[in-house]
Amino acid sequence: MSADTQREATPADVAFIIALAGGETVRAAAATAGISERTAYRRMATPAFRKELALMRAVAFDEAAAQLARASVKAARVVVALLDNPDPKIRLQAAKQATSMATEVGEAGRHLHAVVANAGLVGLCLNDAEVMALLPTVEEQNRLLLEVATPVG
Image 1: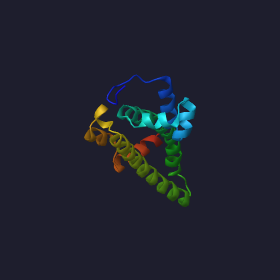
Image 2: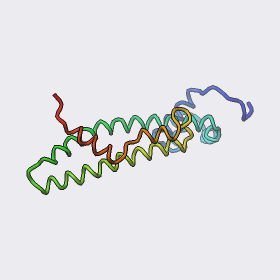
Image 3: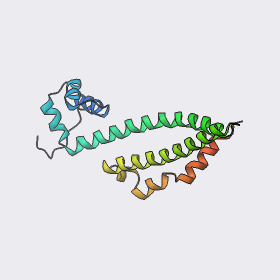
Image 4: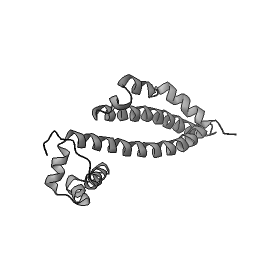
């Protein structure tokens, strides 16, 4: 098979990609997939494999980010509720934490955009301007944090 030939992914390829995306070393991922280390590096040299690996890593990152986002909403509600605490020291710490959380959310969004752009995935779904438009500004983040504090029902 020539290097230009596109081939169908085998179960071993899928296992190798999943192991790599999960953080295993090439050697460990190859062992997990039941392929030689040499074959592993040969697979990694192909653009199609690298694209699939980048997509799998993006999916894994997205799933982790979604779990953290759900936890962040709960954390944000606690922090925002503490802004009304009668103790000024607690209010000050809550204000600092709210500001820090808002900044970190924006930085995480920009980091995700960079990961997607570096993997060449931006063109698959959104262009750079569309992705950047989805990322909240610090002011929007602060507004969202305050909305989270509004009691439901």
